[in-house]
Image 1 (spheres, rainbow, N blue to C red):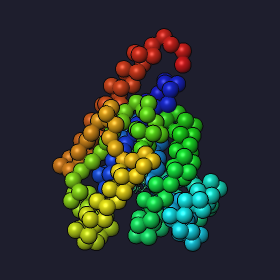
Image 2 (image 1 turned 60 degrees about the horizontal axis):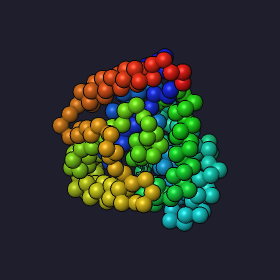
Image 3 (image 1 turned 180 degrees about the horizontal axis):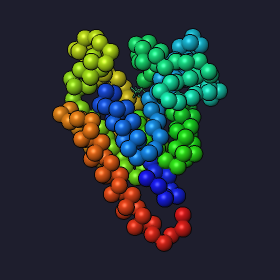
Length: 230
Ligand code: DC
């Protein structure tokens, strides 16, 4: 993917455990683009909130803390103000508190601005989250809504980290409901998103399809933009 002056943005949204990270990483590599896990940013803020002993529902205090945080996502590690929170952000405490932090509009505005700068500085990227196609980059060259049955998503979590499938399925569904039911930027598929159900599909076959869709979309964009200086 090169020769374009307009950033090449691929948006991958969907509920927890749908396979967004695996698919986004693989697609980014094939396209020669960077990958940004925006969920890890909300989790990083949540870890900092818990470390500071702040109540995740205290909107003002959480927003103030977020503004001054230095969040670095690089080669698989997550640093918050220089502290490595890579493991901590996947733990149960952060997972239980992250929806409250993600519902905070000031935090969202701050992180969305950081996500836009990240992508623009790099000339594009594959961004995964809940609101990438709806809010962060509504003009993304490709928007994907990746989903899977709740049971499959729970089984994948258990295969990765262990636990009881039914309990994890319940907690995944609760978090989906909070993410889809919140007022600011709820999880939803935009009408122009390609909906992909990963329940019965391999990562490679999904990535093959998405790569082809990006190529087609870039071709169409080049034609539309042809002759225009942008
Ligand atoms: O993808 P994840 O499970 O790591 O995301 C953690 C939480 O952050 C999830 O409950 C929803 C929220 N989130 C969000 O609101 N917007 C995003 N762009 C990414 C994640």
